Length: 215
Image 1 (cartoon, rainbow, N blue to C red):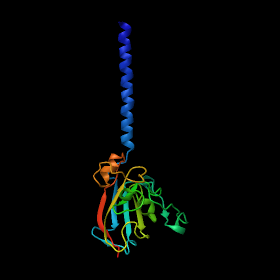
Image 2: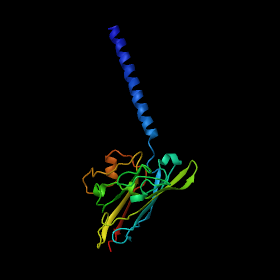
Image 3: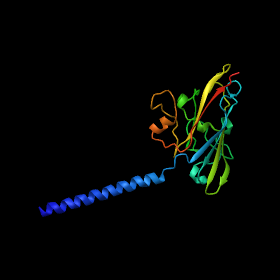
């Protein structure tokens, strides 16, 4: 009986130790996660209701993401790229293809009218031509600007027609997905789907309706 009583105390001690380790791990994970809304996104173009481009191309997606932190906290690096001879060319080489952009790893940009890759759920960030650092307040804020000019026709609109499109922009913690899955089967690709995919959205979300001008 005495030995059984001692064993019970040991078991309680080990259980308590395990619970403390689990609690510490949970607290540690919470501490390292970026705060929600620690990034403020401003979309410069397109604006709501814009009729953008010529022959379904020649329009811009231009945005600034303001991070609460130093440059390292953004994960971003300088990039100047594009199709053909511009891919991986100096001075700031980068890839050029649909998917997440290693030069701005947390950025998610979707266009509902997309015809490439995974369609409306395709992350288009790696098609951006310019990633730059536009403002830095040491230890407090870093602004990353991302700019993309659409050069090919019929990929995000239709030549000869005006096509409704919705731009979706968000920043997630860590590396963004190459494409977003419609997890809730509501026909939209949005923050809810990123949440359900297990991504921590750390920015405000921008959703802007505009028209891709095909004429």
